[in-house]
Length: 419
Image 1 (tube, rainbow, N blue to C red):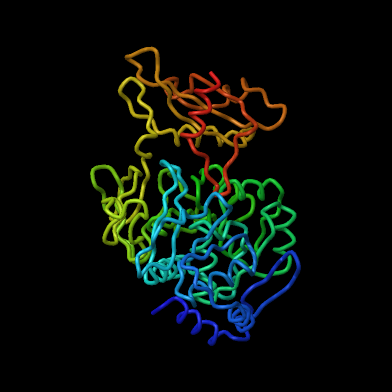
Image 2 (image 1 turned 90 degrees about the vertical axis):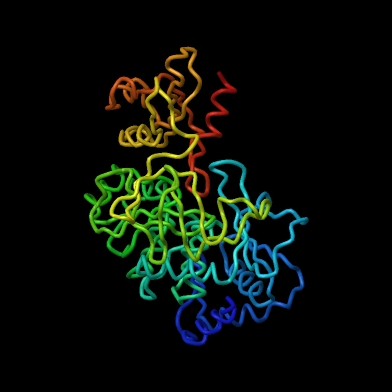
């Protein structure tokens, strides 16, 4: 079934029900009113339509692209626009841009069926409900936001509350207007909201993705607020991969969840491979790239599978640090650093050592609370001597991007340039 036909069924079945809320203005739209907004837009023959921002316009552009059989290109800014020279295959209706965390961002083509499968897997696995509107604090344009906010609204009738920004006061005000909500967010947001004391029982389902969720943050929120943060692991190329369904905090930071409904996992060497009806058709720049073909995506993540579908990430190819022949996961050191209350953000990477036997040396870049002395962080870091960073850089510029990610490659390059 085409996406627009699916939407028409949802809009008809839920015509008088609440579909969309603009928390900043208080304006509300039913499904019938949202459909009327989309139908009012003129028919366009532009083959690729761009959707921008976090507003009603983003959703109406999505619907009109589906209606007009155009390819939808969600864009966070002008930098994410597609080159005009790209020609999508005939059956493609959507294009995603990867985050670029493992290299330059790439465009991925998707069909109607693949987007429908992604939404179905997320709604079914996470148990999203119409009674729990999604609070839209993350970007609608990124894969995480589009799959967790836009598609559940348009294909499953899950209401969406658009929030201007993720600042604690903004989110607090939005929470006061609803008895129950679902919030997909990133770790940096959960940490800020915890510090501001705004987390409460109105949040029925709390989801974290985009970057590693530390055990310290997850456990602290559970202890102080009685709220379980469910870790979600996915990729732009294939949608959702794994989800932590448990009701208690994790005890192993490498555990990211069990496979979503409809997703099959295995490993090729030490790399995780995902087989899913939601996996993209192919890369736009290289349709023959074997890492994304025939419903399968070979990730760059090194993983161990336990009990067949439980995913334990061991690192990412190219990120591991070689200390005298021993492979070190930078994420393990980051986890220890972020467990120190005065450390706001941290990233860890390796640089070549002048000592050939050592191979690499560990660098830690940290953003600390104002007035915190670096020596206190070093003293509080509980790690064996060989895992402790040899080089430190205090940098207030260090913060996640709008996807909730910190690029180790970017900060490694910056560090080497300023040495």
